[in-house]
Length: 388
Image 1 (cartoon, rainbow, N blue to C red):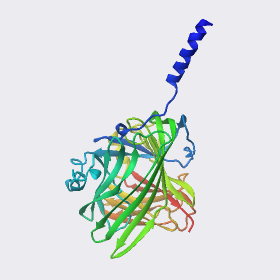
Image 2 (image 1 turned 180 degrees about the vertical axis):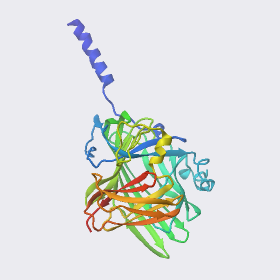
Image 3 (image 1 turned 90 degrees about the vertical axis):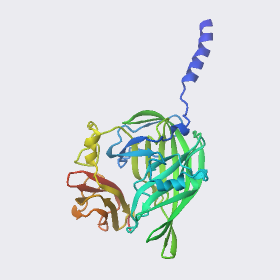
Image 4 (image 1 turned 60 degrees about the vertical axis):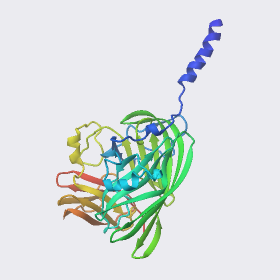
């Protein structure tokens, strides 16, 4: 009995010391200059991710999550890694609210999707402190003219320390005059809730995580030749699984609210280099290849691929920029990979291209629009088709 008397407190102390505890996310867990982070672009059409599956000390096992391509997110020094003209706005010691500590290339810019507007050298600028990680603005060469726009107020993406149960909200807006076009701006209301913690498993490994749920409400503000209007976008959502010292979420699910329902548009997760089959959009689980080999699996020279509107009711318009002339084939596939419309091919010139795609005879649902080059490389977008 004497042995038990002393052993029981020791057992309780050991159990308490080894109990699972929620991690805390701080500034040190955000991206660093020169970080190059690889992601697999996954697909949740099979319903592997249950968005309602969360809570305290939770286990998320998504090791079977399929994917069809990869991409790399890069962070640079805001002074030496971006066009110098942007530094006038984001390296100004007299405006510390918008003084950037890190930047990242943004291939898509604000995605306002007007054909006459060409975007190049687009960068998002961020400020990291012990209290927050915020987007302070963007820089872009618009129709060959370099422009910058500050977020006023700043868009607080995360506030620190970030713990389970935290909730916060921030409002921000930006705008700039586009040469030969008019004015474009956007208002953004961001709401964050840390709604879960535990362990996440993907093909990349198993990690302790916090889950952050975000709702984004955007309103476009446009002025054309003196005529101005505002257009609310569908409310967006993001689920992000955050880990210590990983820079960006290990897993991110994003989408829109459509007809009162959450529709997932994209799933990405941190990953190592993997290979992909040419027969379809899904990953070959056993294949691995080098970075040099992987590079031919995305259409080289095709950038700024956008689709508008998405969801589509009848007519979809794809816009993209080609660095060289090439022949591109277009296919529309359902979630099983079956073609739902005749494949088409076009010989396209270099520069900005616009390709109308007819969805009027296609039933409502989720589809993959695939662009394939002559060498077999492809770019794939997910499109939601809704009833008119």
